[in-house]
Image 1 (cartoon, rainbow, N blue to C red):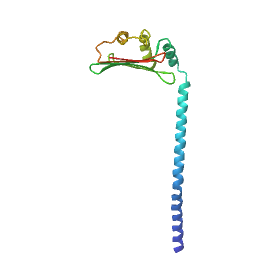
Image 2 (image 1 turned 60 degrees about the vertical axis):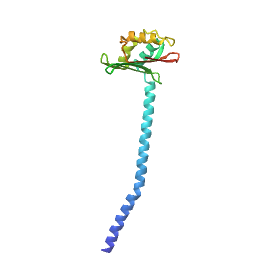
Image 3 (image 1 turned 180 degrees about the vertical axis):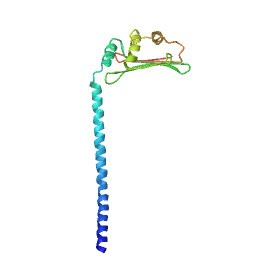
Image 4 (image 1 turned 30 degrees about the horizontal axis):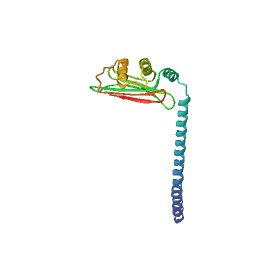
Length: 172
């Protein structure tokens, strides 16, 4: 009976020692697995970035072609009116050459993005005759008239980046 007890205790202790000994391996295996997953995610992110940069987007092609016809590459307009009514136009050129376009018009309850926003904004901005030497009052008047906006705003901010790289801010 003592031999049986010793054998059972020995087997039990062996199992405990084996289980304790594998804990470090399990942690190392888990860390290795996590590192491999992170590397895979990093690779996927890099692949996605590369894909995004090289993917041909017909909308982006059209936007880029149209923007080459006017004298600025970026146009960001922000007007604040009473009662939390805002009018925002964002036409930003990203580092990859693509454009991010957004229109938020609280006056007409209109929110547009992408090509839909561009098709609404472009016909308006292509007729602006502002250049980096334009006087601020003239720029503000042209923008308000072109977009059909009232001049009773609380805040007017316009940031324009011209084709030659000059960036101008117009504030009132």
